Length: 302
Image 1 (cartoon, one colour):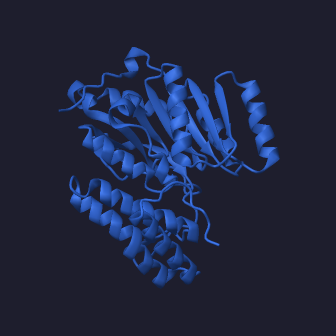
Image 2: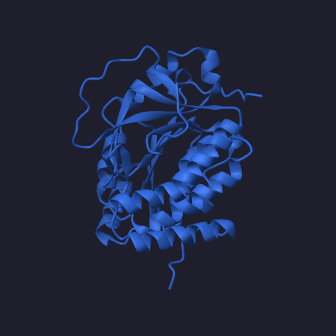
């Protein structure tokens, strides 16, 4: 049964953006790009160590009555910080939550363009939508000119978490972000719970967000992310968590995720990446902890 969620921008529903920050001054650029496009902004900081950044964040919060600053004393992970944003958005009686990484930037009129395309949809299609995601442009390449597809949205369950417009009632139906995953696959695990709840995830074809993908590159047709060893742990462990959770509901996707997180990742390391032995050790540790149902933040091996 499809849950009916009637949240429309015509009804003046408020939008709250949550920016997750950690040890980077890029958060200020992200904040500047979004503050005038939303009703409220939350910056959830996961224990940034740079005192200068923290002081600038405090000054921002003092100068902007629509900004809520949450300074976590410990890094509890991206899912925890996003869930803090959800709770604040509920307090403010918002209808939508916009999730953002500190590496992202919203071009002008991003929110306006997203809602314009959303409101062009039929009532029937609106009711099924839980998440609206943006397309991505790598920083430095510019937005350029893109032909407008006839259909402004297409279904996509593998979007990056940053730049997602999520209806608040979705969290009552599908639940919040899974905090025990800490980082990696937090977004995809959520999208498939949305599907399980009978709702849909759509990617906008005409709305773009600027994002930095770090050291990712393409070699011989493969997407190489060059993740540090500790991230290989989370990718392997959480990929197997996804496999266990969705094997009997979405078997094809469960196998694809598990393979990519373990054997696929190991093959890319062998062919293209440095620090191979350490990365393999972290993959094996991730597999071990997944089998033992050990989740949360990684305790570095001694």
